[in-house]
Length: 242
Image (cartoon, rainbow, N blue to C red):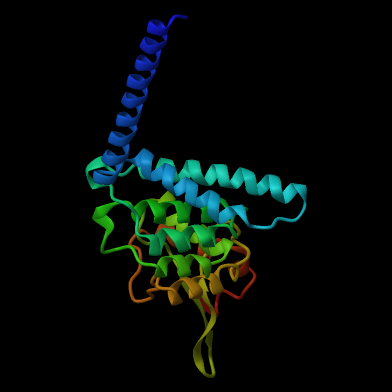
């Protein structure tokens, strides 16, 4: 290659490098001015890597689980953020997204919690939810159990704002009525009426559900399972009523 060709090659290389630098600067500037779901998702993904990076795991099996969870969690985050219309995207509040990712690393074995944290982080990227998002929700998620998370998902899956709950009352000839079983919610096991009582009380304490015995669902079919379960059938129906 003679000197002239060498100079031409160097000039071409410099021009191409300048083009790439300009494009990179334009992309960065664009993300700063108006973030995209892709840029937000990538940045949060880096934060997830950083938070999870130092977490010690025990045994190869746990390490595999953790690695899979991190990938699934980042994919879920991107999917949720992409649901936000571009005109409503904003950079998430670090006081929400930071604690949410920090807390989520202890729940990588539970799919419900992964989804909850992902939806919370995505909501913090939506300017329509500015007045609804609070760090409190991170603490609330940390204080619920697997059973309680399942109850909350029922409202989404059934697309309803209300689910049936009953109290069983025992009628005695001498002292009248008294509660026999309270906060009975039957879902997956009709014979275990006490399974979710404590969970409902905790969800109400956290302000995530409201337990109301002054109103009821007008469709009596909702309550049929409470009348047909083994617990009620084994009692003397003459003295029990809902």
